Length: 244
Length: 244
Image (cartoon, rainbow over all chains, first blue to last red; front, top):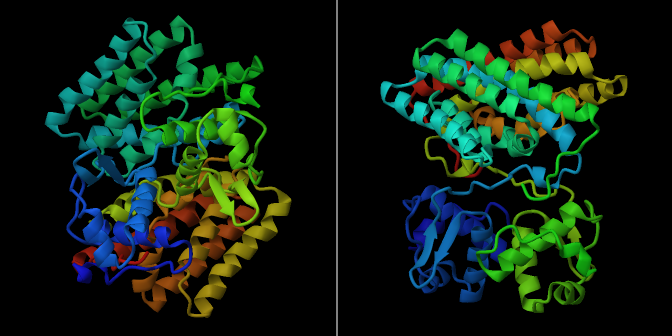
């Protein structure tokens, strides 16, 4: 197995456990260990990399913290499904002025999501239309049930991005929709009904392969949300963001 | 100090060290411990959180792995400058088809960066113009020196985003410019001279507060790069991405 580790060691500084973590990480990137696969055990790794088992254990912990590996008790160490993807990758949780953050995010969403919706209308596959309708309905259901619809809302917007068949866009959506649920909590009944109506218009436009209607629907939807944020600002309120 | 920890524990599952890491993380988010500040020492943390020092040590390691804390030998544990921001947050290093990734990224860049350049032209402050010119010159210098200009190129595009005064956009640039250096390495002399010319046009347009010229300059620049990527594809080449 030694030959697997030839191409590594790009950073030669830092603690040994960090360097070993990068070697293991390279093993996953460059060799045939994929998502969901089991890693060689501690003994094998220690021997191949010529380090102690304690160092392997430290390195594995680093990669668990970075969502690259997961330890299944009594089974071994596995490559995660969501390989290397971090919740809150830009550290928005640590931003103090959440209202400013929300405005910055909406400025981006207003620019990018109408384009995403239009592209989805052009590229959606027949078999994806049913799932899009399901995601749209799921938001309606969580709202009817009186539950916080933040997560289902993000899932709806993310599925639209998935229909573009650009693999990066669905990864960008959770970043730019950060804090959606801050606003779902403070909104009144009327804007929520607007949301449902807009979602329905967008979904139908995409399923009808009508890029212009999809773009306009998304633009109207986001501008209506932006109106809520600006209203918050005039009230000089910071949304409660303690537990996102 | 106990009162500091009232609002935490949003996830009650997972190992103890993970929960303690979230408590420390909440302490940073919600209390008055900011970027660059020193954390209370191991003894104090262990006492306030009513856990052993070993658990504190494990929790601190998790937060170091996530780029929230750094340990300065002999000095103590500090909150990092780049709080919680992760290099390669979307796990692009692990994507096998780098050419497809590059095309997906350029599709996004062509949409978003001309808008960013136009907004920079509208919002740039007088005192930012000199720094923008410096960043533009820095790319020229690295190329003249025969060095890989990937990092200086990203820094140039990132500074344009900074001039929009939208705090999120400069964080998005390192994500969507992922792999810029893959292409700087394989390009020939001619397109590199094009790059410099485009950068100069964009910089001048922004400094002249001319949004339309800035938008057009950026669009031409990115489309020219896209042409290189498409040429790569016809050659059926995958850029060598082993050591990004």
